[in-house]
Length: 100
Figure 1 (cartoon, rainbow, N blue to C red):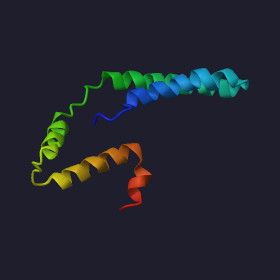
Figure 2 (figure 1 turned 135 degrees about the vertical axis):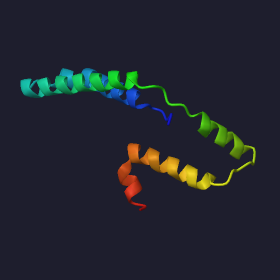
Figure 3 (figure 1 turned 180 degrees about the horizontal axis):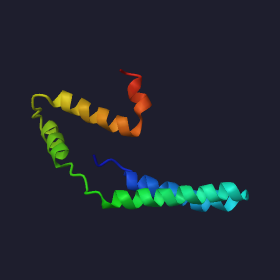
Figure 4 (figure 1 turned 180 degrees about the vertical axis):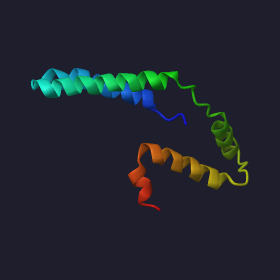
């Protein structure tokens, strides 16, 4: 799934926020250390995500083009629902739970 922002972009944005907005305001040494640990962990996540192969959404693009052209294959609704569910399980699982 190629939604934006990507998981890698989110990790980077959080790390930048912690470094530029939070860390400069932290005076408690313990909290400052824990913030640095969190930033380091996000750096690890970022690098791990960078190593993953890029997701290919060619099938989804082809299906969207077919739908726009009026050619809706059998099983399209089930496929779109399954894709939406998979995305919600990652992005907002509590939202999905409301409709089960």
